[in-house]
Amino acid sequence: MSDQEYLQSVLGDQTLTDDSDELKTLRTRRADVESLLRSAFPGKKFSFRYGGSMAKGTLIREQYDLDLIFYVHADEVGCGDTLEDIYNNVAAALGSGYQVRRKTSALRLLGSGVASKGQDFHIDVVPGRFTDGSQKDCYLHQTTGEKSRLKTNLDVHIEHVRGCGVIDAVRLLKLIRVRRAIPVKQFIWELMNIDALNAFKRRGLPEQVEIALRAIADAEVPPNVEDPANPKGNDLSGAVSDAWLEMKAATKSVIRQVDAKGWTAVLGPVSERNEAIRSAVVKTAVAATSAPAKAWWRD
Image 1 (cartoon, rainbow, N blue to C red):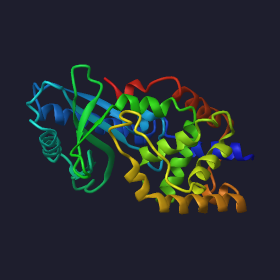
Image 2 (cartoon, rainbow, N blue to C red):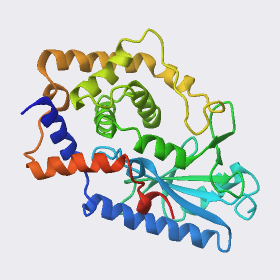
Image 3 (cartoon, rainbow, N blue to C red):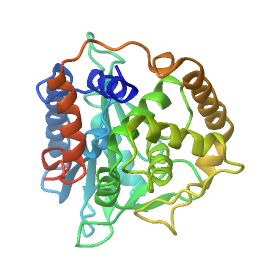
Image 4 (cartoon, one colour):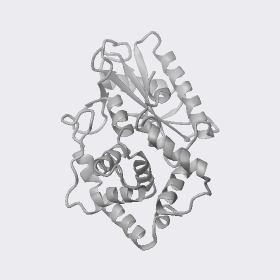
């Protein structure tokens, strides 16, 4: 098996099909969360949007999630006067059915019942408010950092990743980040990888992954990473620099292992996959560059 075939087989192992138990369960929980929030804020004007790895096309079995976006309309005050109020009120509403772990701008849902207590449900609820009636840009509350609010645009983020042309490499690099416990947010890791591979979209998969790793391992200083939804307003440099030493160490280690023993030393054995499954992985990656995931991320 060539390196290209091996890495495609790794992706096959990491692919969850639409009829998989994991995604069926996630859809059911998504519906339950939406129902709870509709009941908590009756008659109020808000919209659900869908993000995370499902929407971006970066899903892997070892780390998948759904960002369930709860955006209050710009002229609606019934869900809270301020962004912090909205964040707290949504957290309180979700607390009636779930354990809620508060993150910087999101609310992670865990099980609260006897059978599911503490179980990670792979759902982050992200409360926010649209900036105006166009329902594109929005503000999010931030519990940490210098600024208490963040201006962003979910659609821009999704389109940036889905249209990058290197989704397979991004997914494999995500798997490496997860297994090596590299302490940087996945979206920032994705942005770094996409930037590094912008000029190498026609290269083979093994070469793309190595190029992205070497871009970090060989860099003298942390790269400048911009938020495509708000490049001037959102400073990501701190998040990159905080994890820079760990990123360099991890990427150097992976490269040494590949050079010495090949990709299997890094990613391990894979299940036997027939050609039809490998072809399906390739087709999924191609489709991800041209078509939005309508069922997941937008009403």
